[in-house]
Amino acid sequence: MRRAWSLLTAAALAAAGFLAAGPPAAAADADLVRNGGFEAGLDGWNCSAGSGAAVTTPVHGGTTALRATPAGQDNARCSQTVTVKPDSAYTLGAWVQGAYVYLGASGTGTTDVSAWTQSPGAWKHLTTTFRTGPSTTSVTVHTHGWYGQPAHVTDDVTLVGPDPGGPGQPRPPAAPTGLTASATSSSSVLLTWTAVAGATSYTVHRDGAAPLPVTSASASVSGLAASTAYTFRVSAANAAGESPQSAPVSVTTSGGGGGGGGLPAHALVGYLHTSFANGSGYVRMADVPASWDVINLAFGEPTSVTSGDIRFRLCPVAECPNVESPAEFKAAVKAKQAAGKKVLISIGGQNGQVQLPTTAARDTFVSSVAAIIDEYGLDGLDIDFEGHSLSLATGDTDFRSPTTPGIVNLISAVKTLKARYGAGFVLTMAPETFFVQLGYQFYGSGPWGGQDPRAGAYLPVIHALRDDLTLLHVQDYNSGPIMGLDNQYHSMGGADFHIAMTDMLLTGFPVAGNTARVFPALRPDQVAIGLPATTNAGNGHTSPAEVTKALNCLTKKTDCGTYQTHGTWPGLRGLMTWSVNWDRFGGWEFSRNFDAYYGRTA
Image (cartoon, rainbow, N blue to C red; front, side, top):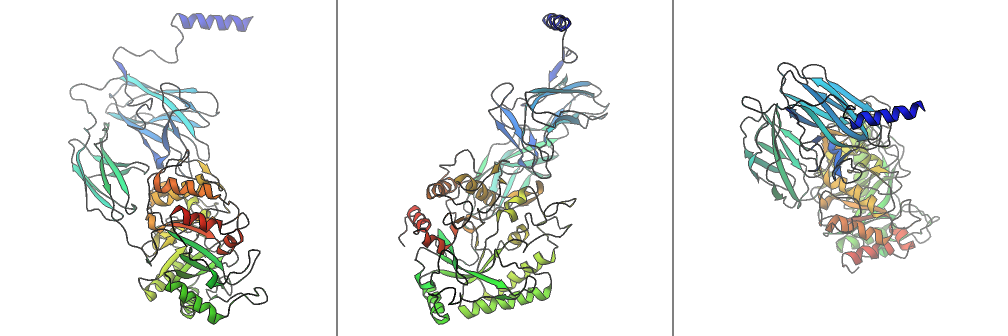
């Protein structure tokens, strides 16, 4: 009875206008937040590490809301600088869904404030108040989640208080004009625009990429993919806020060269079980079909994990009764090369752990690998370091300048081999997703230690050797779920996984969420997708129909499903598989699907 009376009383008070969430706005008060309902997408907002996106469901009001996803060391902070009036009271509010969602204001000139909600579920209204300092003319309002938490949603952000407009009050600058692109190469472009009166900084915007802040009316944008179209816009800012974005300028990068070269526009890469047998059976080099453009000999392995001494031998007759003689094998290699194929020695594999902790191991690696290449007349090297071959030492946090001896020595060894054999040297790599794409969230043991030191450990090797790299074909199999650039987790076995993982390589990404350390995009001709040929070959087998969908999405932007790529790359080099032997076991289904897709006749 008492509860019923209370509810009726509250309803009556609300009907009479007495029940309010905060103090009533004064006559001159206004809502100063620009695009607080996100009906114009993210216009006016800056989200850290590309963490924010406008979504149509769920929404609190209107048709659009902000969805932001924490990743790695980034808490998905989305902010806007707003012009305010000094020594004035303001009320900040927003509707949110999710756990540990924060709303706050900084730069108030008095006490910065925040409010937060702990529990997920229905929409909750966050609100807080503050007073600006006597000389404060702008504040930054922001919302963010918390580390390790799932995505949260924010809508209808308001900042209500005195309107600072009028003579003598600071205003955000006008939108930049005259944006032009020049000095375009295969991986970079120079942008220039007319300086804006009153602007103290600028931001370059490119769809799908982290905003690039600059202080002058020009910017050199690098890390672009060759033969790819890009669209840029620029905004200006000062203490009062940020301008609208400029009119766009579009540019297409030029075609790039490639380490090794000599490959067809679309290539098929396969590993040949040369030194061992398993349930797939032994395939002689002369019997490898013409579909295969790059044949990686599996495997050269070390005499011990840290020796750097790599040895290679053909499969013993007792294990492989139909193995050819060394002379027959070498003759078959020459025949493949005469037909335009590339034959490489692949180092490592699942069982061949390779670490180069010392310069002595580095030098031994160089001499022993060169001896194999010379003996068999091979075209180059495939690095298939798995397991614990690569890891980052504590404190090694920047992929652009690694300090871990094993990483530094590997880079040096490969550069030495490249210099020895020249421009025709073919260099490929086959890392697992854990060592590459996982670097979007985690890198090494992390800034405070405790993470797996192998996370992202291939990134410094790829980055240092990108100018020498012919092909990177990440193993999109035997993998756990990996977060893509949409900040959603993707699982192996379907087109979606290959689309998301490849998009990361062709777009680039901030390492461990740090927008100051962006791993630049690789050229499309440097990237192939790695898949198992059959269900027997590895976890994550993808059916031919799903492989076709992935290729359609990445090269034509069709069949993409729910994932939105950050570009279209008709120059994507092709596919890699484990293995030639398993494809034969499966009736050549994998290679025949590739040939059919590209209209090739083997």
